[in-house]
Length: 388
Image 1 (cartoon, rainbow, N blue to C red):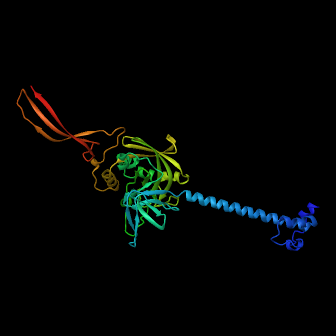
Image 2: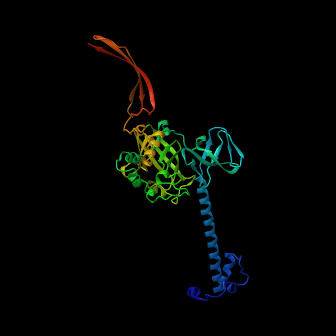
Image 3: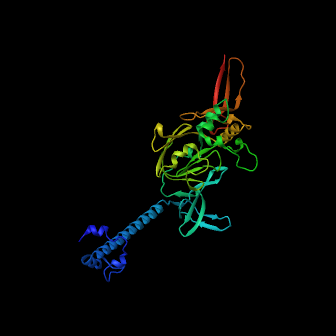
């Protein structure tokens, strides 16, 4: 048979006209072989049937790929266990009961967000019950991440952590914004987004970080713009070291994407990262270094300072040019925070010459230099002074 003729033959001939008698659209390879034996048109028809089988095979492969993708998407869902019995009430007043130890799951791109832009200490997570398609906005502290079983230090959890460049700005004598502009460049192009007149200083709010067993967050200094929450699994933890496995990143309770308004400059490098990846925290006194993927100078993501809500308020007021009391801001220290003493009461027995004076003191041991810092303990001390 002339295969050259087959390849260059009647290119415009309809395959229905050239098919052998009895060879219809549903004819299999066995029937097509008759045409192959008898004439050239039969071979063409057989090739057509083969093409159809190949197309069907490709469709099956595509279906398997889509099925695999669906399985992969489903595998990205995360489950949480309720810590107690509680009721969630929707905006229209409908109540949903969640029982202790009930398993709730994330779905699609829903995740962790801030309950109130003015209070980044309260976070919620969007979860779903097994038999209820309604999205429930659950207080994140009412559930446990089922993949996590390691807790971090309470000292780390309870502290406010702010970027160190705020303290660098505080130490600057020239201005109140140059170092902030360098680290948060979106303020350079800031524009009033409200109907009422507002200045940059009024729109600025001190950004800070928070850490927990299965989540961490970074609140941008421009509230509602670029907040970032991480769903994590704690893989290792001590007083001065934490290793997190990042399962997913969210912004405003949705999957974190590059289009998020006014992202912090340092977060841009995380947009293109695929989860899971790792975050390492090393703590040295009041300082914390945050690293991505490994602990090295080149992977240092941010340096944070341990502080308090009151100190944050005073730093923020200073940056805004408002009345402030910087004596309430304790400068950070490396290593264990120094313990300061404060005399609160003195009972002295006056004596004459060649006598001994007895002094009793109540001493408060604080975690920092300022009198506004936490009192660790109170001790009574007695001193004897001899006057010759």
